[in-house]
Length: 141
Image 1 (cartoon, rainbow, N blue to C red):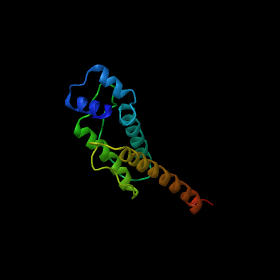
Image 2 (spheres, rainbow, N blue to C red):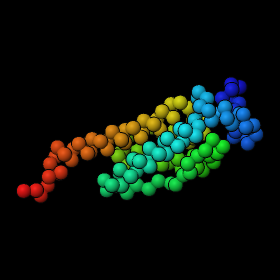
Image 3 (cartoon, rainbow, N blue to C red):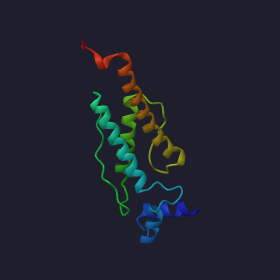
Image 4 (cartoon, rainbow, N blue to C red):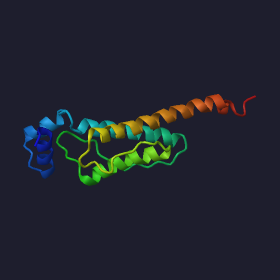
């Protein structure tokens, strides 16, 4: 078994030593760690706020700000992925997200990021369309 698999197994089993947790959290190539979780969650909340201000009803599951010593539960990871799915679905972004976070591949991780990126692009396009359609100046003399 490769190093990443061994670390993941130990962390999931709850038997990982502190040095193994530190190695995982330090950004081991191929790992999805606390910085990834927090970055995506921050981006999701940012996009949600923009969508809400544009009149869309979007609710995200509340999630913690993870620290290096945290190991997210399966339920938290399901909520995490569902938050991205909810944002993607508001604007009908066509990115296939992983079914679960279990055994997340680099392609799945990239799909999560791509879904958020496309939501941001579409929001920017919407703002530009308001200006060009004259809605900014509706009712002005």
